[in-house]
Image 1 (cartoon, rainbow, N blue to C red):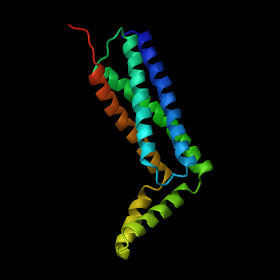
Image 2: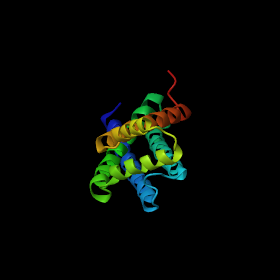
Image 3: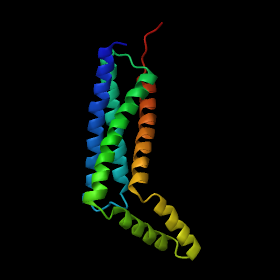
Image 4: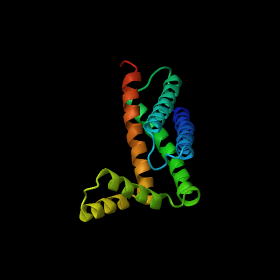
Length: 175
């Protein structure tokens, strides 16, 4: 593979990753503006998934066009993960800004919201069970844990989307 083709793939990963990262931020801001920060509506998750699938697939189509109509599954996975990684980094930068400047009480509010939901949903829980649930929720109520999960989830969905897309769009030269 030529250096030019490698550079073109890298630029596709960066450009589509930036597009996906900023689109993810917009979806998150929509959720925030509508006041569903602690309990997002199912439509936000569907919208987020549709945006992710669309942008990764568009990036893979661009690679396939660049390769004269050829695309292998491995190449699809590499490009899809590259797009997902760039998007995750952009989203993580936004989340650091969000947690520190836009909504600095996010984690405290999230814990309080989860405690309220537990009390409403399970009114007969013992004090020990409530404390266990609080400890479980508190483990994930930090920027580090949340950023790590953002990266893992982004790469996981990027892998699945690019694998399925690669299998569908696969076209290789016959030997």
